[in-house]
Image (cartoon, rainbow, N blue to C red; front, top):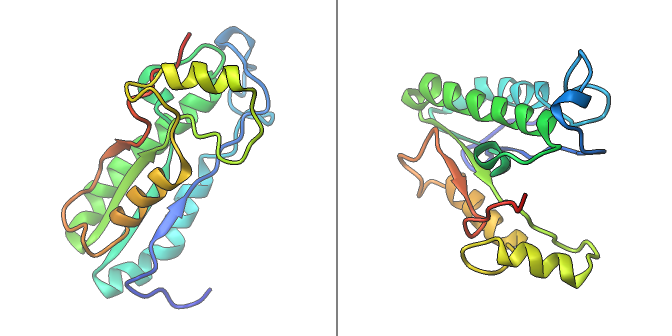
Length: 171
């Protein structure tokens, strides 16, 4: 692993949904079986960068999550539960690390189709679900992450920040 310097923040963005499952359909092991990818990775990433961040007295860790943690959505029980755990981990890290100059936050980009081919009627429906009446673009979340990872961020920590135009998932 290379030496981490002040400009090297840690950003974690992993989470795959292979199939939607309602609570009654989730097996005894809950989130396993391909429903998502998490939660040990953000913990392991933080552990990997922590010593160097502490030594420099400066660090930024941003985890990428989903507004579904706040809104809920049928069929997403495993995914949302894991992402909620990520919020808890981020807040605990904030309380433990902020005094050492290490700030930790969550960014929730919401529905961001990016370059994925998607039928126009789905894009329209998703846009209508946001207060801004449009879907988010990846650059919007990226700009927030850049700010949170920068030296300009001197006191924002332990926060879950939506960059989704106040998107409320249609049920």
